[in-house]
Image (cartoon, rainbow, N blue to C red; front, side, top):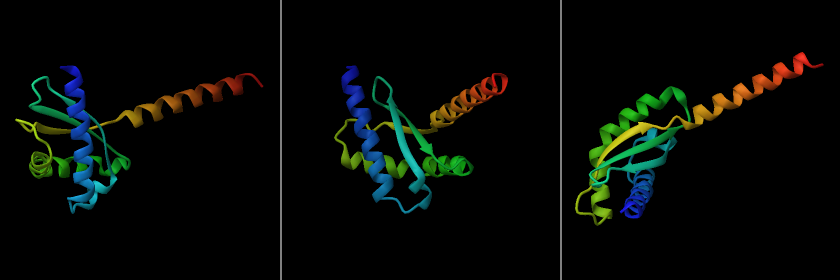
Length: 118
């Protein structure tokens, strides 16, 4: 069952990406990358994680996605042959922020080591 869920999630990820690129006129979606889709076991709910490079437009972009989720879901229905099209919930994927924070901490440690050991 898990393999099927993973395949459906990957298909939904690809299709949402294509819908945002080709079938929406909102320029805010040009800066969005769908990073992960996590489906419930019954395939009725999809958590869609998105990455937005510009931090200052993340909340606005998330609002736009949530406003467009009905449209996106209807486009998915026409492309996918599933009994039920999952309810879409969009979330910001902050993995890149986390990685950047760790890199900065490592740089700071190395900087402090170099200053204490001339």
